[in-house]
Image (cartoon, rainbow over all chains, first blue to last red):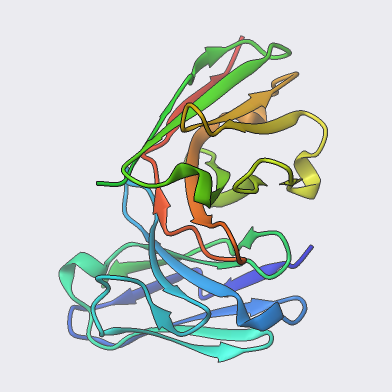
Length: 107
Length: 120
């Protein structure tokens, strides 16, 4: 089973800041099948990025994904108030596993 | 519009069984793989199982094999999850989600979830 480790656990930032979230896999992710999801309290997760760097439909271009192999990054270029949430990475190259999440909170 | 509506949650005693359903609408259900993902209170997401679009292939999280059974009825546009011998740590919101049927893909649409509470 591929284990995904996200860092940091919590990111304290202000609106307008740049957010950089990391997801590291215990082994190489086949075909870079890596997705990022956003979850707000009481809501279902929402797909942001898939195939490591492709934005899902309707996702603003301030969200970008990068990386390959075992190291992946989600970047939010300028945080909007609605971006404060928990973010999860998920690999789907070998069954499915999620990272433990990174909470982006208002500083 | 795409809709996934889970049902069947509630309070259940440890050791009992439970069946969850997910009713799909607004898309061609039989063209999509379907997943169950759960989230314990205050915790992260845990992938549970996936079933292929035609129902012939089923895969489970290694740690959950044996007590969980995923199934689907494409004639009824419905996904199911049977959970046996429930434990307190099965308490969670259970989400159903879809992914592309003909390649390994992300979960691009999720239901709102159904809460299962295992307690005596």
